[in-house]
Image 1 (cartoon, rainbow, N blue to C red):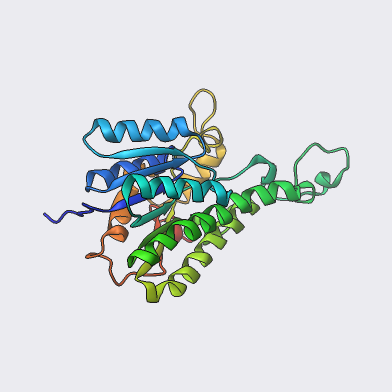
Image 2 (image 1 turned 180 degrees about the vertical axis):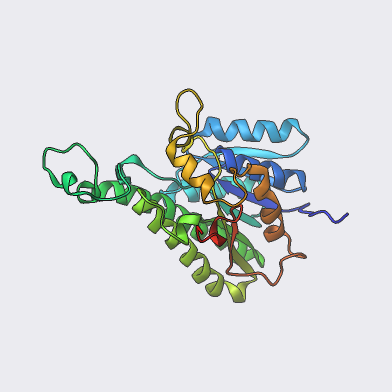
Length: 281
């Protein structure tokens, strides 16, 4: 049976302490890659690296702020010292904020009452939008600037961004996150063209609905029962369930494998249980 062989490759994974990207890191390590695990919270990165190392892989954790170029540059120099090269970049850092989220799906006349405590579109703050845009757009742009430069100098590499179903059709309540992920998809295609003569491929994965630490409280109540939001999501997902983080690994390895996907460039691949294909009727 064919298996992805990443022996000799170094993969940098941002957001590597999170649910999805820790799985990405472990999967790449199992294929022989050495992993630089980056996370804003170094303890989270260390937990992922420790698990990889205890399973026979090789990983080093780094605390890093993907919104600060100087932090990324400093970590890059440490990675080059520890690993010697960078071949794969997974831009996994991202997320949403309650400050950029409306309380209701639809605006109603009573929401216009100045005494209303409902958070609607008109009282969302620029600061909330800026946070979400920066985390997702700059959190993809800056690591690519810093680490793809290594790839360009060494003869090539692979960048994988994390988009979302929001990029195809904006979900209710989360306008900033939807717009930001649409930007990630667009940036992915732009980078793929820009880097094409340098043997650097840039693609993205667009997950459907997966349970993470960030969204767990939105999807289940304190007793563990599915919320109304969850019921709507599952009703719109033909497979009728949430995805498991392990179900993203096949696409991840395909995109990282130079033999399997050498002519795949500038695409955004949905992994969504049919959500993007379902019209609702």
